[in-house]
Image (cartoon, rainbow, N blue to C red):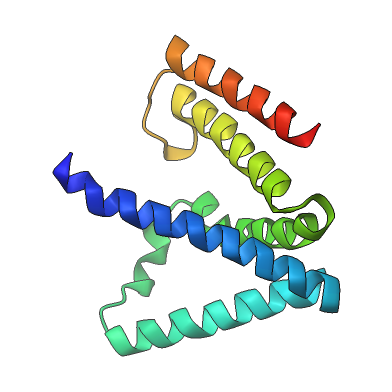
Length: 145
């Protein structure tokens, strides 16, 4: 468990970043529009990661051909994620938007694990996990009603 503590902390930081990003993108969406807020988000992110790759000189971008084709759609999926967060947050609120996003992630993640789809490691859906998803869906219902 000790080795997992840094990873758990990192995941928590990621969750905080998602919440802050949702709020900021919602603010931009209301002021300048969805497409413009997605452009600013991806533009600044792309610029920063491009600079980091150039400065690190350890990049292995040329190995992209070894990745399954569907994994290369991650950027498009990122646009969908960022766009839906920016659009939904000012209309539904942070808690409702993030609750729906997280619940849908759990459900799709459980299906990918259950059937080993798209390269996911096979992790059968136990009764406990199924009950957890049920509780999660009940929580979503309580939050959005």
